[in-house]
Image (tube, rainbow, N blue to C red; front, top):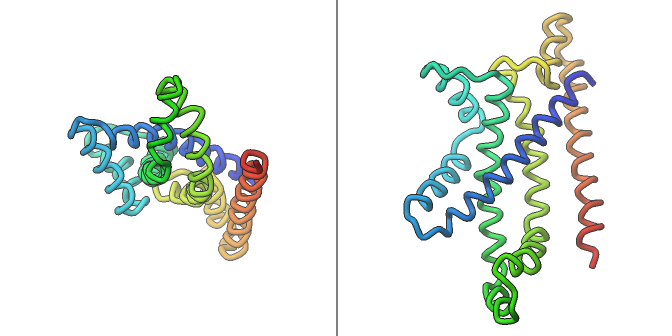
Length: 203
């Protein structure tokens, strides 16, 4: 089980920061300024159309070539966060498009402020729409943490597995155990998401 907690911690952090950045990118997509729309579109395009491994490499080795040195763990978290934000921003944007804007106008006509309209009407519907895509992205983030080994991370699940492999040369056994642990962690996330969905969306 060594390294499993670090794997989960890395995935959760990258997901939290990814959601926050994705919300900002979603707002930028609708901004009147072309520069902001361009930044958001570029982020999403690069995140969705380049390999996550390339993104982590660029943060670790690319910035290192510019004399900006990141730790292996920070480069991994930043890379997965970058990827998460790109995918989640599109999920959020699609979710918002699925909610008729007439609902906001109706709420405004009833005396609600824009903030109240979004908090009470838009956000609950948006959460229902994007909840399962967010769950899928969380599982994907957990699996992407295995890429940390290519930039020298050695205290996550894959890194610890590789260390035992080097010491014992029992490659199949240790990586099979790691695969089972990744599977159990992912299934645990899915089960937790289903329980949350049942509590949040049963009415």
